[in-house]
Length: 390
Image (cartoon, rainbow, N blue to C red; front, side, top):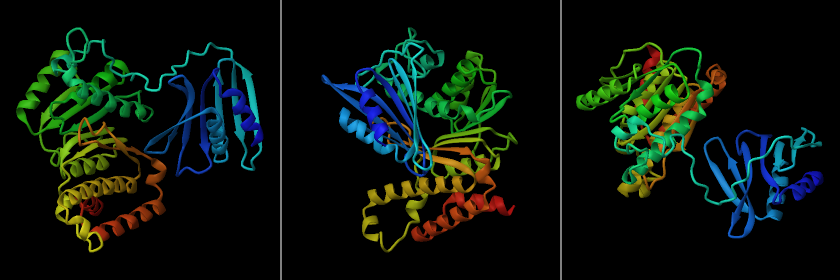
């Protein structure tokens, strides 16, 4: 790996633009690392952003440390792409460890690198660009400025759209897509989703928002009509009983309370939904069921037991989705300082996994062991078992 270290020593300097380390030898740990230069005070550092399937980690290193760390990483990865102001370098490492370095002169102008440590956030819905529904929902003024007291909501909307942006390749742009939003409430995110997918990305979609509150449904329906969103409809109804469609491409359930989330997830699986986005809320069910002699001393503290139960609930939901053939991630929706309901489950259908009986059996065994350990009976598990027997 001497040639890789030499290349890094020659490129990690003021002319360095970025690097991407990819194609890991094992897929169960870090799957990609991005490197960029930053300034801390007057000192040049290099930030390594490491991505797992569910998280991102950052470390800021001085040049010698960064060179050594990147060279070390190339023992675990097969490819590195380096861009500088003047050249592009591709590093390939074969299965047997043979290193090939291809270097080409930069033929296109490279954008000036932003060296600030805390770069200003670039939002999908930008401040200063007027969006009618954001004004009516009290988030934006008529001149496109964000209402300061609603900045948290603005960030939340954009964070949600980032999750959708990630799964766009999973959505077929050549036909009408059906999206169901269970427990849509005031529908900040429902309107944002329609605006983003239909107005900005030009997808042919119809979205159905479902909620139990009649006054909320009337208000949202009036706004949808006002904006001319012909394929955005709001209906009053219960998640568990809804049968208005036979096929759904994406199911969204945000803050559906307690087991309402389970009914929504079970419906989504039954519809063979391609994508599921769920932010669970008020996970009370397992809190009343959990019993375990080993954990008993900890669970004597009511607050700790409540949090453990909520995490166990969402962890088991993720495992059930995985068992049913979904690539499932547990992601942070928004910082805790903005809302305590900050876990989002994102599940994308994986056809190979659906057909893998060995994977299903393995997951089933793991779920059963966990359920037995905690002495619980999650609603989602029962709903999926009933569906399989039907």
